[in-house]
Length: 124
Image (cartoon, rainbow, N blue to C red; front, side, top):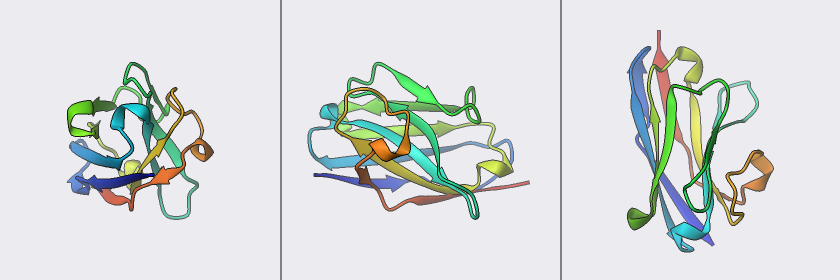
């Protein structure tokens, strides 16, 4: 089992930045791939970013490429999503997710473990 706890959400103006953190407990951090999935009201969930088991590879949704950066700290069992140049359309609940596969997941159903979610609101 993997327990995930997110933090770092909040309200920010368009063009601003936020950093989300996800602390993992239970299974050894280096043995899970992780990612962030967001869901805005009335919209489908979107896989925003994912990082591989080793931390050596990442993938991003086209909507956030060049603006968001996902990184991991094995010593702290934590991943970070740095979000820059935020837009109102980035407003959503962001969920941290994990899976025991090695590669950075490219689809939401691959994730088997989920955090409680953190709200990100970007005002125009």
